[in-house]
Length: 145
Image (cartoon, rainbow, N blue to C red; front, top):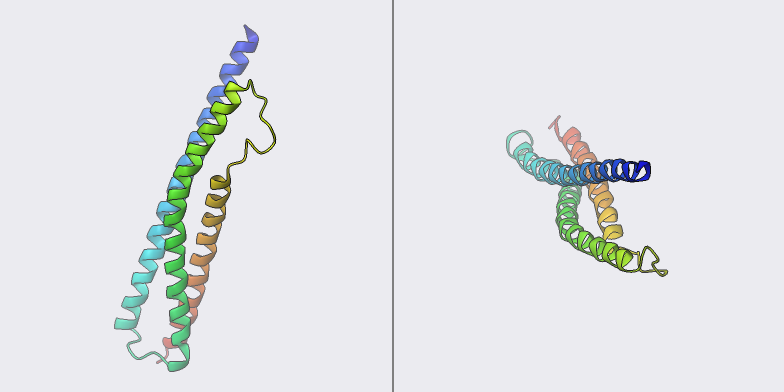
């Protein structure tokens, strides 16, 4: 009886942690997508209202920022699709684990989709930060003009 209660407690806690992790991943993707798109739009307004004639030597900073924001958005969108595939693959692994009484062979537990999703999320964040840095450099360089 005590073993069953221990397992139920473990299972409930694990389920709540998995749900929290999934919610955090959803929130991260949404916020990053919103921030990248918003910052991209903000840069256009900056050029139109504050620096309509940017210094020629600084335009590359803006272009680099735009490319980084675009790549961040694209990376986030691709991670959405791969995340769905990762969940599907994890269900397959769990089903296999259950059918084999927990005895998976080497490689059967691998989830390449989950690995790629993590990599894309980190890439999105790095690209967003890169875009912010180049946009800031462009903005600072053109505030005096």
